[in-house]
Image 1 (tube, rainbow, N blue to C red):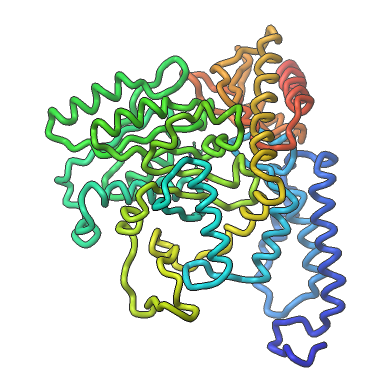
Image 2: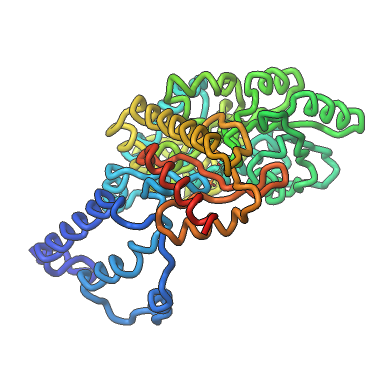
Length: 471
Ligand SMILES: *Cc1c(COP(=O)(O)O)cnc(C)c1O
């Protein structure tokens, strides 16, 4: 009854609110269940876009009215990655359990910056699971962040602090340190950006050539490191890609581990979507050597199918990780009992102090499906990608532009404008691939990440490519 809560922001009519909440839950479940009946994506009509010009509300409205506004203006015009026809960029499809977890996390409204409470144990359990999955030792640390871009950036800061000592946190870089790092030219754009943001500068990252399989050329790496050492510079880090964003190539992680070890360099793996392939017995062998890395950045929100956002950083040497970020602050004093116990806290491992409960949607997704089923869904994505590649090779007017090592297929129609084809596909509502450039050619790029995407979805995409490019 309304006797206990009268803040003005809690419901005055709990029963009415409950009925409305159940309707909203049903509508969101229907959205996912019936997603195939709707277009992958549709352009927003001008009047829909204009509706977002309204001024901030001075007075509250009925939740039912807000819900119907959401169902009319927002839900139909989403990015489409819940839909099996979505094949653009690298987006996960989400799950119903993940959606429910978001609701439960919202209700609990936990701040996971630190302190001693059960949500922290959920996050710690995921750390133990990830240590186990990646063969990392007991002392390894982990941290939920927004995404792999942030995780890569934090890994760089840890490697930099390890190379220069913690004093660098106070003095800052002078520019004379001579630190240089290496990745392949196929590394994700967030890697050079991490170097920009770190103050080391993108010029201190060498982007090296790739071999015919789009993997980092080990000989080029050896030569570049030798040349830098001869010039008096200090090679400190090498970044391997476990699933490049263009074609899904996996660098030779074992060779990189051996090389980095011999050179005394930090070995970081950008495994944004590919790293969780460790859950699949078919894909794990492709990642051999990842267990010897110093740090791994990956996303639960891509192949892990956890709703956005849920990026993760795993660091072998938890002490090195903490040394890069932990700061004493009077108001964050640690105790051995009470709510302020449970040190170290996640805020000791990164720049975020307030942190949401990303761990819950990850925990619930992993528990609801199990790693075997999630791994099987990843393997199935690769099978769909192989089917797509075979279909393209069988079409005389289409040409495959890169080998299909994992779940990404790049192709084109010689003589046709791939950007126009892809925009037509988006507007058709049938499929949403994206584009990239392979060997100077604009390619149609289909990344199969959504667990719902089946062979007939990619067949429909190819049929539509042929239809729109011949009209
Ligand atoms: C998606 C992706 C990133 C960036 O991850 P976000 O979660 O989008 O920040 C980095 N590297 C690779 C290989 C990716 O696929």
